[in-house]
Length: 256
Length: 213
Image 1 (cartoon, chains in turn purple, yellow):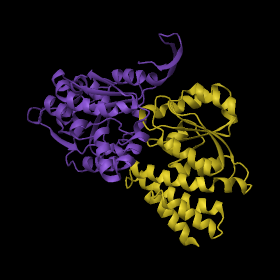
Image 2 (cartoon, rainbow over the protein chains, first blue to last red):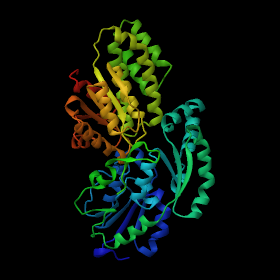
Image 3 (cartoon, rainbow over the protein chains, first blue to last red):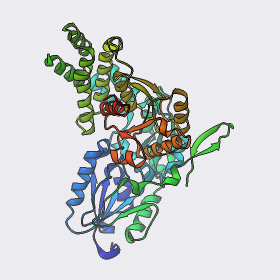
Image 4 (cartoon, rainbow over the protein chains, first blue to last red):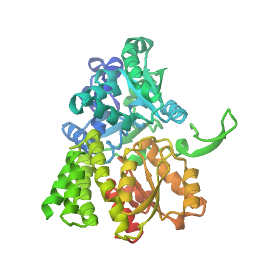
């Protein structure tokens, strides 16, 4: 691939997006290098910033560095571009990328803020409540583990399996249902959402011309820095009063 | 004498729920002051818990266990602290902002503020801006504290401050904010009066905001 300016393209992405990225952006065809980082770096945002910075700094030639990340708990906040140009999806986390757009993410978020998402990557990495419980139970005993889980999950309302193809929904359904069964104790309901590869396809377009302004992507030029406000979209989160079906007033967020 | 404080702080750090009441009782039996046991033992431990959590050296389960131990220690001291005649520090309304249901951090701040002598009114989680303004009118607190875990929801803190302003209540309360993605710069940007980087610093900040520290 010859991206704009003929500079090399390097993908730095979370493992959770590896399969969708590899499928749509195969390295051999696109002629770029991909570095996939460990799952769950976002749990300690300060460490995440450091690890990603080290990875970016380790890229020798000035490159277009495509970040397979969202703001991820502010883990990307503060990263310096150095000699490179950074291209980042303008999303808070990978769920918007899997759903296909930030607009859909906001719609789902507004409908049910207490949603826990499962995806192929997160299930395969063992990042889900059932696995968490099993790990805690081994370490702290069942009673204590149940208490810890309760503290963390009691406010959630919904468990959603998101995949960008029907075959993936089917493939991961049995595992997702096991998790759903465990989460029934908090009355979490189980749903499936067929996401879309739209965001990743858009990414391919933008890689071709990263200088074009785009509301779905952030471009940080060489010498620049990723700042959290680049991800803000005030229109989307302005509270508005709208009547609900029951006629009761409820605060919702407009999906711009 | 400082040895027992160190043992208490270590017990908190280890999340040793059965041990903490024993140690606190031992300290009281030695004639130590309830306030000092709280601040030089329990709070010191909890502060270290907060620091280790932030740096990734401790995770949520350990933090929760430490919080449980802290609670057990505080319960033992509660009546003594009240009886020691320490005037109530002030009143705080706390809530996790709209769209966010993560309340572990907020609950910890509430516990630490109670320990510091505040009356805490906990609104819960997913609290809309209007609920905060209603609570200010109803309870007339000195401070409003907001928390958020997600970058998606932290912006709701700004909207809540705006709602407080629009309701003409901004000069009646101090506003403090906290939560994993929040930092001092963000707090300043949205017009908060302060930012706490962990539960202990949140309670310290609350004391400062009411001129009690």
